[in-house]
Image (cartoon, rainbow, N blue to C red; front, side, top):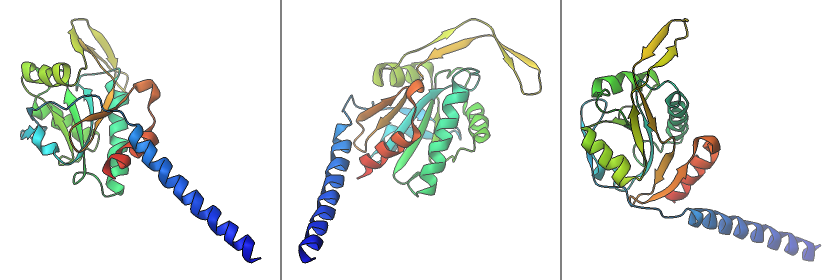
Length: 210
């Protein structure tokens, strides 16, 4: 009996050590891609947002525009889900910051971004919607974060829930990737739309906070 209890105890300890080892390995598996560039953009409340505000925090970012009818209605709810989950865990704002950077800065004023953000229940302090001059935005997204976007002058029909049709005179082709950076400002993960897994994203965030 005593031998059996000893074997059970050793098995439990081994299981715990294995789980801890797996957890460390999972965190180590996140690659290091490149550094988040230094920038200063403007958020949905008209406040300056310098990249130094990210120091010591994990950042999850995506790229949207308020007139988007195809991709952004998929991307933004995903960020809203992450906001809800992180808020429930008490991690939002103090340890994790969400960024949605406009790929249509000429149209996306702070006021337009505020209306858009409020439509998704964004917390203005922890989920920042950013815009700026076209040159500054492109320097951040394309030069710094290695993601492309381009305005295309073609009309798109947008059908509202009530059946009315809204004609958009242009579209912006842009990356659908969401980007995760650690507390030191190094990009550690890129999530594609087709492979989105909220549980994986939250797990990756937690691993970067350990």
